[in-house]
Image (cartoon, rainbow, N blue to C red; front, side, top):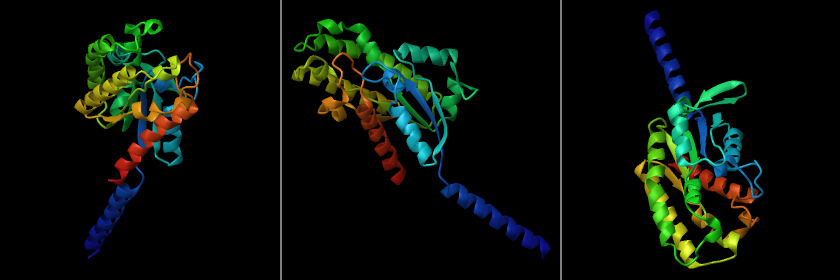
Length: 248
């Protein structure tokens, strides 16, 4: 009889533990990768508060943040992230060292902004043609394999949710022009990024439409980086994606 009571009690305790684990808030191990947009460089070239910071704070406020590790570096191209992965780059946070491969393996959420510097490196921004976008499309087609290779390499380690953050069209605000050809170019870029993300089983957050009619996000005509409002808009797009997925 005592043995049966022990079994019943054990089953009740086990059931309580299972129910608790099912319904307790799942905390995110969040890893940020990418360039100056991921880093949060503002419209005046200063290291500021970016979308990753807003996302980190949001998760923390919701008691959903287990860990946040930032591997983003201003100026990074796809080759830099591939090198970081090859060399298993390490960063220190709160006197603790994290390497990129282990962080990605443990991650439940990754955001990445990459590819813009690959493009900028291939063009002469001081001599842009606003009517003939053919050379720029060729440049995009040229760098797409590098972006795909980078995301594929990240996927080897990050087995959970990965969000690719797209790019906006800064040309109308930098050069005070609304040439439809340049808009077509960034629409093309947006669609290519979407395809690459999908092919690597990653979420894609489009910034092309978000920034399209919001010049106030890019107040400095000498700098392509967003201000705090722009970064909040990126964060809000990511937040909506996360909340929508959690409702399902």
